[in-house]
Length: 179
Image (cartoon, rainbow, N blue to C red; front, side, top):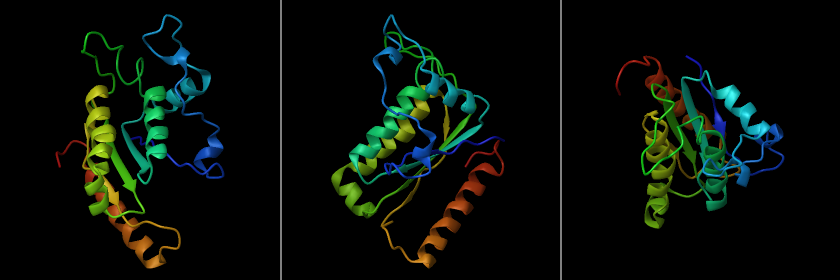
């Protein structure tokens, strides 16, 4: 089984930004426009993802800007012509059926605060429900880590990483089994 890790991180000095990928959707990439085409960087991303069976997405959930950047990636890469056929009159043709998605989020805030602000449901709606349905992906249970802040103790990092490894192994060890 091939996996792709899609990481949305805002730090321009981070490893993910070293890929030199601009997440902003361009007018020429909107599938409903007569001048529609896939940009070379988006085509390169799609080429990397075309043989992937499962896509774990790591999304920092602490700010709307980070979520917008991740949503822009979805629009550019997993949009029309790759994730689904062009939308017509409210219907669509999923093009990634049989593949899987698991979303992993981390936030400096508590899950309780995310719920109070309505952000938790927003995350799940966009990155699990919407993406799964429109692309035909089998959505695995969302994994979220809260209170992730700079200076977090090594012990707590280890506990969270072990939890993540256990859950991912559980979900993908037997790709055909329902969980």
